[in-house]
Length: 77
Image 1 (cartoon, rainbow, N blue to C red):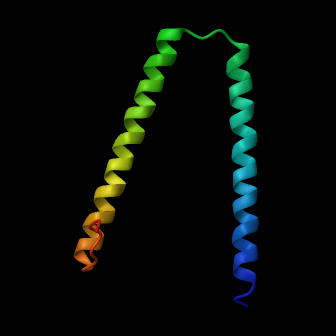
Image 2 (cartoon, rainbow, N blue to C red):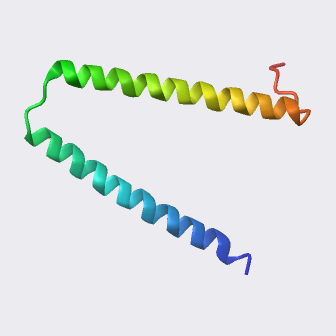
């Protein structure tokens, strides 16, 4: 039974990534067909970068907080 776990997870991962790649390529193709405003594009890009950086900071703080709570030492040598 345990031998099938990696097969199922890898198959699921490939299907999900393949579907997401298809829709990402389709979305970018559709966006290229219609005219976009450069200011709106830069503003949206800035928002995406800001949200990504905040999410990255939150994950890092959560990871270090959890590791400290569990007694792990993550300091650099």
